[in-house]
Amino acid sequence: MAQAHEIGVGVIGMGWMGLVHSRSYRMIADRFPTGGIRARLVICADDVEARARAAQDRLGFEQSTTDWRQVVGHPEVRVVNIAAPNHLHLEMVRAAAAAGKPIFCEKPVGRSSTETAAIARIAREAGVLSWVGYNYRWAPLVQYARQLVRDGKLGTLTHYRGRFFADYGSNPDGVLSWRFQHEVAGYGTLGDLMSHVADMAHMLAGPIQRVVANRKTFISSRPTATPGQGTHFSVNPDAPRSPVTNEDYVGALVQFAGGAQGHLEVCRVVRGPRCEMAFELNGTRGALKWDFERMNELQLFLPDGTAEHDGPVLIQSGPQHPFYESFYPGPAISMSYEDLKLIETFQFLRSVVEGKQGEPGFAEALAVAEVQDAMERSWASERWEDVKRLS
Image (cartoon, rainbow, N blue to C red; front, side, top):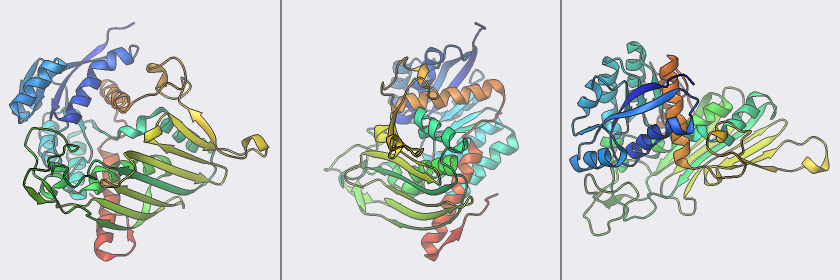
């Protein structure tokens, strides 16, 4: 086996997502031993010093800092991974692009559609590779569903329904993390959850042409969070309360350029579903369903005129599906959320080694932002809005 390409990685933001990304980089050489890539954790940054040092000790970074600019400027950092709150993304991307370094940025890339467009333009003009954390793309059965669609197994697509129902904000005493604050996060569920749903719709059913959308904030205030402690799942009923300044819910009817009709819906305070990132897709020859809460199963309907196939069939993940064999040798062994993050970090570093822009990068994030922009315009107009290009 040829010597692996060693790539120096710098990670900015050591909250939950920064830890997940860092663990993923550490495991690339193990899970993808023939991929010829080894990640080196050079430096991590967090504005809370204790968290930065804890991440260094826990994950094996060579250095830690409270100044994210040291990550970008470090001579041994080849790629910059941004897992900081949304309001910092633009400045960080601008600095990394100016340094000529490939960028992995967690979604939502910008606080707004215009900010995402600016970020995409900066990277494009600098000629740097980009990557975005749309990790649900990488579930083996989602990749298999994409293959079925591309191969025409479902015929012409007629219907698409996508949703992300999460309950992380369902407790009114859940803390006011930055995700609930417009000045820091920008969009609420339109950014946090709809970004995943719209990206998945684009990947499976093609570009969205028109939308009509609405929004609602169900919980208007929350306990103030303690900086540097906990996550957006934390609860603190005794803390003073402050207003929630972005939306809890977004629903939209959509029309796809290819003629399919659809519905996209997201909520962070819904009771019942816990992490229901799901889609249902119908075509003239068949249909399929997938739900992240049962991510290792796919419901597939491909009738062939026999009684045995006149109904949905349960497909379980196995070595015959993309990426699965890098984790398990036999079928029906459950994969996890962090396995998907591992696949996406490997795909990112592979694009860097090959010098080729892969998907999803900032171009795909921009396509999502254009849909978000149309939804936001529809909130104001209360009518159908075309999805328009953002420069």
